[in-house]
Amino acid sequence: MARPSRAAEKRTELVAAARRAVAERGMLGLRLRDVADQAEMSPGSVLYYFPTLADLLREVQREAVDRFCAAREDAVRAEPDPRRRLAAMIASGLPSGPGDELCVLLYELGTVSRRDPAYAAEHIRLFERQAGVYAGILESGAATGAFRLTRDAADIARTLVALEDGYGLHIVNAVPAVDAAHAARLLRAYAADATGRDPGDFDLDRRDLEGDT
Image (cartoon, rainbow, N blue to C red; front, side, top):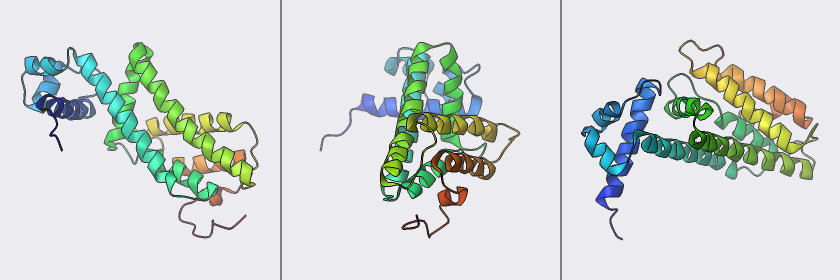
């Protein structure tokens, strides 16, 4: 098997360094020097691999979006029952707390999307990919009779992602307004209202869900 090129390895290292710099300093006032220090390189060496800091940060965002979405897709893939798939999806979408590096990274990078179309496009991809997973679960549950949807599956899916985004932002704040456990309960309550189920049906700690209609 051919070894990755040195340039590819350095680009991967710089993405990791930029990820650490954003998580540590935030996007506001982030400098090329901050990334270079994390990578133990000169600023000029960083620019050899990425023409601008913005190019590097867009790659950080792309990688973070793919990693986050892939983890959510993996969390539901093995669940045969729509209720347990929906429960697993809800459980996978919230930050664990202010120290959740990946979620903090996504929120930090998302702040730029209001002004930069490239960041906005990636932020939309993040939203739509998650909503697509939710919609698939909801449609499957409706088709099998497990769910009685109160509105269009796509609308429920988008609302669930929007609720996760809102609660998640409060969870990662320096002084959280809500913790992950409380936010998850609120999400399960909305999911229950939207699917004609009981909130307890979406609690992954329940082992009696499969076969329980």
